[in-house]
Image (cartoon, one colour):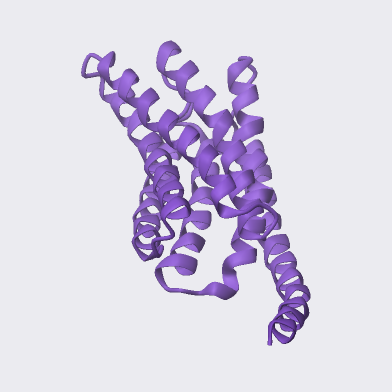
Length: 222
């Protein structure tokens, strides 16, 4: 089973966390496309970010130096620190360059973890980690390099993959029905690619649609 499967105790805890990763990716995606105010989204970022730090810490305390459990738990902190960082930025209004460059680190780690998943025999989560790597790389471009034109594309991609890579796999893991094979991995990769293409299209359309409204607001304020 994949990185988020783990042992019975660690697996159940991390799978619950994975369920809420789907929720926060969805909420943050809605925030990036302008549906939810940032301060409203901050609350759930603190909740989920805290969960993704507390649960791995509990798992590590009971790991008995088991390398497999330690490895499985290490990736969870990448999510927890990201969401806590997002929540702090949303509340304080601090610029996001630091989060952007941290996202590049997370993206690189996700590529490595994804590759290791293939070695460990879980091709589906190997693909899922690579999809997450794409998302975090978009965060890097958006926040670290200031590519503001990618804001809505990043938001749509987060929305489209939130349930695909987190909520649905979490339910399969929690009910003991999770499976991983080459065919399912190829299907996940295809859906991830489709989600990226759709995110680019939707991002461009919503950006173009928002531009006239912004121009009208500006003229009114003048």
